[in-house]
Amino acid sequence: MTHQSPNAGGLDQSEAASAVGASADDPAFDAMAQRVLTRGHATTWLNHWSLLHADFRALARMNTIGFDGTLLQMRLRAAGHEVARTSADLVLPHVFSRLDDGTRITLIGAVPEAGEAAARRLERFDVQVIDGYDGLRRFKAQPSVLADFDPRLVIVGLGAGLQEVVASVALGLVPEASVCTAGGWIDQYARAADNYFPDWVHAARLGWAWRIAHEPKRLTKRYTVEALDFVAHAPQLVSRLEAMGSFFDLGLAVSRQA
Image (cartoon, rainbow, N blue to C red; front, side, top):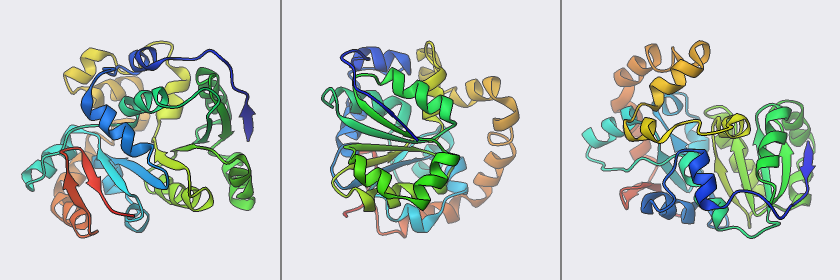
């Protein structure tokens, strides 16, 4: 667990958006950023893989669920739900642009080196890093480390299911903060000297192919065998989403009143 002091430098919105292949003026991303920054609000994103491995009890405690991934969007549209694609890497630059210098942000997840590198890229903020290994174990044993830091924003980048559990716990500890999940974003952001997803990859909806090419051992199964598994179980999974008492609005996400 480490702490990064604020600095006057850092990325502005357009620079940060470029770093992740986002459009700085996309209204869907900006609207989602407003939701993410709602105080006392937990936001997560689902794709076909994370829905397949979801902890539905923790998922039901999220206030907003965004959708990231063509396959899941297709299945939702087949069920009558028109939703736009958003994702943590596309929305977080808009979130950061709305925060003042020195704002306290906690990053939970990734290896310690990745957390430190991400904190350095977020140098205009006051960043607390709780890595996803020893740091997470210490946080579970002593949750006051988060409450004592009192962040405005908590970003949880852990595996599907677990990150929603930790996000829910974090919001309980700092109920005036905003909490969002980010999957592998911390690691991607830490090591992206330039775009992790170039603009053309987003435009062509080929993020899945780009990720397989860059992380074949970890992700090939996710986009082949497990994609077929998702298709087979999609009707039941979509029904479980609908049964959580949520509703689809603005073509952006599932939202649930706190």
